[in-house]
Image 1 (tube, one colour):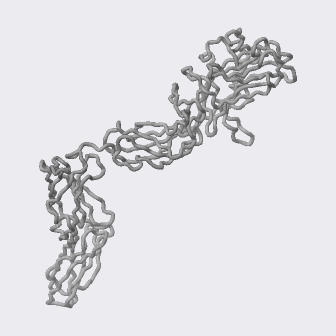
Image 2 (cartoon, rainbow, N blue to C red):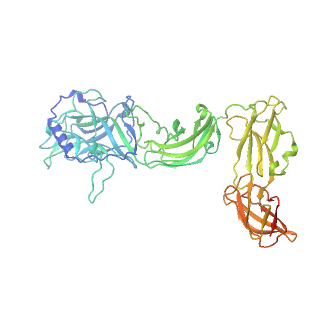
Image 3 (spheres, rainbow, N blue to C red):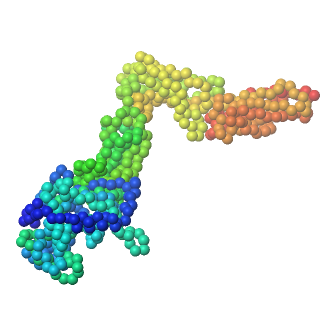
Length: 573
């Protein structure tokens, strides 16, 4: 298309009273607009011209024409217009038209739109009641126009020309015209579109034709810029398939995450890293051949793109990277969300991590070695409960043999029952000679560890010594020293050292009779490890008897099988 022979500002301004009254009547006749879902995201698309004046593609717009003398042309790349025009010097029949239609892609709808629109109507040689027209229509092509100029109503042009993009030629599409039409039987039609059209019509019906003008265009509709807000109500479906962020516990530098996913609307756009609930970084998952790049320039806070499906609808094993150099050292809650271009988000990762390693612990090297002063204690040892307390000591030395002073060591303990946690018992600090000492309190059968972290925030230990101790259960038992025949009395006892399992400890009461120990009752302790047993002698006066309590080994109780000291009971008549 060549430069227009007649530009909008070269025409005399005509009265628009008829047009305004018609438009007002149409606005009053439409139904109330229903609000969009509150959770739906949205993004802007620029067509023909960007707000900064740079050209924009016309993605989403499709031309149409039903007559050789009706043309739909695109000069946006050259700083021009989308044009729908009736060529001059030609006879154009009624019902001939050309234009451009914008339709939202699948999975989206138009939330709002603004258009910069001009029109010229120079056909003064219409025949009969035929007339040239230019219109903007929604929600569908052929719908009632929300903006129109008809020659028969003495409408000429859009008014004084103030440039391709100005407040004068700015038109906001009425919200009610973006609602899809109701269909018979209930429901609604497909999502609304926007159509710019020009042509020849006969409002009275019948024949006649529009016979052109002395310029290139007898009638023309011009679109210089459109900002269309598309709404997308669905979030992307994304899963994590790999990357260091899924397994690393001490994070630093650049970390990666691999994702696979699909989206049904605007496409998979960004991976957002949140640290403790606050956004720290965002990166584009796949720039989709540079289409998935926010060109900005909006005043509504939404991202803006030049394409209606700006981002890839599917990604497979796509890696994204985050730099943790600016994240403060220490424990954090890490969350990664993946969004589509409209901002709908899906959480794909949520875990606790430690960033960085923190301060050096005595030395910055990871190769320091713990040495025990008594190597005998490193072999499994067996003791009774009252002697289960240990005194452990040793040194922490660098690989060259020099002592590591000022290092914090931890004393850990894991009791020997199924599912027992590792607990920190106490800590100490090595002296200038690298020496350390721990006084280990009494306890059950257990694994005792002396451990050193190379750095304060390390999740694991760089050096560790393990001591294994097996401890006999300690059962306290008491009873009256003298009882009478026929007089009831109680044995009372308890398990010393704690760690009573939820199902309580099982105690066997035994009596020494005829040269051997015989079980006379099986009991359970209470939750504190205490138990009681009532007994009555029916005979046996003058004889002393020995009783004891016995507990067997189980995986639920972290002590070896043991017996109490025998209790002697003398019977009187």
